[in-house]
Image: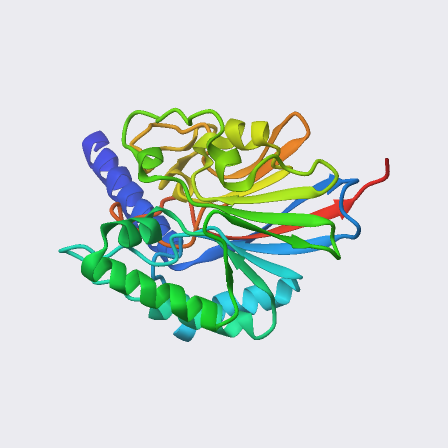
Length: 290
């Protein structure tokens, strides 16, 4: 009788886990984050999207579009990996990302940076580079401001938005590559301390380096929330094959600087999500007094 009960419990546990995985692979949540600064001229609401990896939530990503519209953001930020890099086992499908971005671009300004998947396709050149260039052109034709180690100034908010495209050595497995001194300054120079500095940087591992450079707010993705999340322990594994990564998802603070790390919307390589549905991040940057 005891053995039968144990078997029944194990079967029920497996069924429950499968149900959770299915739910989290097909649903997303909207989470709101809030930071304050006396540098900005007025409040601003961002919607952060990351790591779609060609996933569709409804036809033409209509469910995602509805969720973004309900949040009423001022600006859309995209932190990369909206497509999955093409290789011998996978043909890149741009349509889910372009359908989503195309509809959102009709109503909102969009600022984007590449993730490791877009960067890898560009880096490999030949047929992969051709596909990336086509994607790049379509984004720009939609009016997306694609920041490839570039920045732009939003005078209304007294805010600079920079898009950092890390070299591929910063995505190595198992061991973290040390960022060279002056790496970020090489692209952006020294930041203007009087302006609010927002950095779109796909890989959150280098949050300390982003803060040292002067980013008041960093928005990242890449880690997919740790793929599976356990109570108290958080995300289980990062794409760098690091167990229980320090930065797995949510809001992080160092001194008076912040990072919002999206848990992403899609999957690749390890095609599951457990206790970890996709995430749309709503970030409110509110003006504070002196």
